[in-house]
Length: 426
Image 1 (tube, helix red, strand yellow):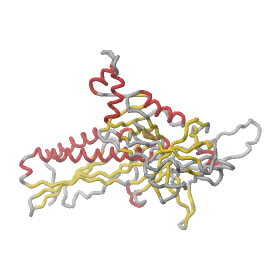
Image 2: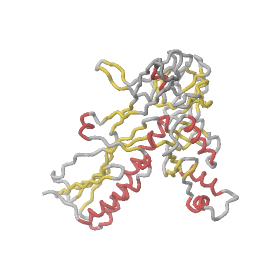
Image 3: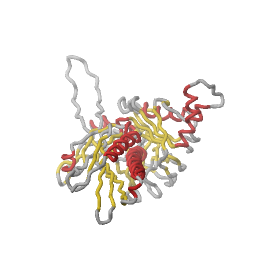
Image 4: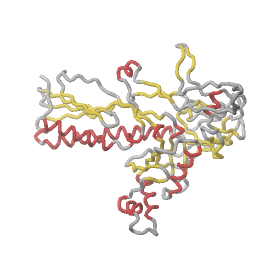
């Protein structure tokens, strides 16, 4: 006979869901893409999500023929339901004499699953965000956040729905700036900073305090690594493409990454941030140089001379294709076969992340758990579409009840050039 939940348990689960939803701080500020679960099962839980088109314009006079029509290249990235998180626990018939224990354990399970989702989103931005803002001093000034605003504006990132999550110490450093030595009571902004260490909206970013934050180690690659940016065929001549042809036919291409050859990868590590001499960022739409060196991240190290970076270096040099012109992201002002790489994470520091909503996406998943297999099942869905499943099973021999709480989801950073990291004490 199937187990069933008591009324008290059902009420408790509803309360848990409410608390679970409240704890999903970061997931509220990324896009949500709901998938067809049958299709996802048939596609190995992977779907390709499109990136924004970037078009090019030409001069044209009405009444005259257009000199040439350009091809449009659609770029896409793979998104996977890659996180299957479970909190299992069991209680004996003696434990259940204290009904509060069951509620406390459920609260703990909810807290952990919500944390898993928030951490997955943070990790996606922290590991792939390619807009890097290093600050020499400790956190404590409006100008620090304003530099993040500037790097986004200069490269054409939309100026709405921008968010920033800071470590507790860095967030409190900014709050201290709002308090100031010359503060006056009655100012709502500084009063909140003084009373609750609250920052709120700063320089176009809605800011949040994290009680956990990734740490970025100091770069150990040295100062003598070089890369070839000399022109056509060099490492600064990446050509975006929608698909490539393999033995199995045409397959999609993930254009967020590029494998580059450098003089040495000794001591280079994933997460390192760097610039390249003479390689400047451009506005993604106008293609005008920002006058600021483009920032890159190391995704992985392949061998002693090759590594994977993000974003790719699209210089559109020599005779560029339509795709290179559309997605050009750098201006190579000083082509060289020995352009110097300069690492930006010179000291270990907490990773503060910032992003535009469209860059990060969460994909809610769903388990097809049978409700008539001798196990009591309850499920509910948050506003973001994230499903929480709770199951209970009683073992008559041991007089124990096994519980488990599950959630299935995926997170993808669709465009690393619309998210980044802020590092202090560099």
